[in-house]
Length: 384
Image 1 (tube, rainbow, N blue to C red):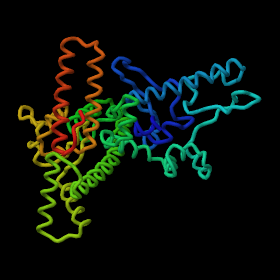
Image 2: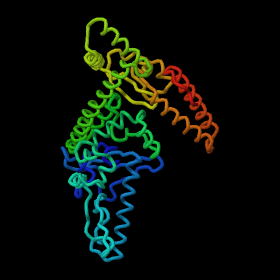
Image 3: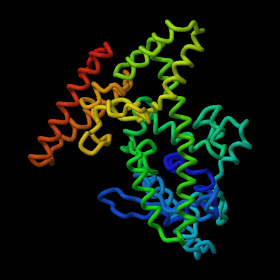
């Protein structure tokens, strides 16, 4: 599940016994920089394997599976099984063996499949139901992991369960999967690379673009649903702050005066008005940027007259705090507190030189100031 949804892959592209992941699928470009690559088979279009960069969580998951396969290989060699002669690189990562009293570890390869658990859905010990509840069987659907990837991408800084898991596995970054969807500057760079590929790489180029477009449709769908949910909460009086929250309330007040709506229709009308103007969420640890593709892009605080572009890489609580496109709520305060705790531990552990230590202390002070300011605006107690 981790490998599939963190890389927005289809189920068969990971667990299939012939075209799924094999032992040795992970390529390490730099252990120090944590740059890893895995070639995934593209089922829908290319029908071949294409290399993708993967995050550290994917790397750890694959290495864990490889350790298990190595253990099986040692047992095969000791027991004289014919499978011991099979190259380790030809062994599917999602294969396993049955255990028995007579043979200890069976010689026949078995293969994991979510559909096997769907057929056993009435069994209370079903592992999928145990992990995901009654709705756990949704994992048997082909595209459910792509939707999971999008949900994690948008909610990873505000959902407590996702935040807890992310801090436990020490990895929040999903951007290694693909170019960030709402960044036209990066997209132009990628298209330039594609344009310079030799003609024999045309099929691969088309497959990359098709995969990106397929995932973008799902990201757009989930992003719009999230924006609609937040607009509803703002209008309902939930605690939100930032320039975009003020903007939503202003639009709502204007619509309320002009036309008589039922409550649900009024919220829906506000949402469609916002969507038509091009607003779309871009998540950060301190809140969301709702700039999207709106016409008045120069009003954003990260816009630079010098190069006529937005510097999203400079996003921070202090930078975004006074921006009209910024939106944040109570859930992000907890995330900022986690970041502050991590910075304090890093400073207390030592090992930093004078310049690095001074920078970390400056970052911590700015973060604490931002947390205090955010708590004041949201009218909640600052526990720091």
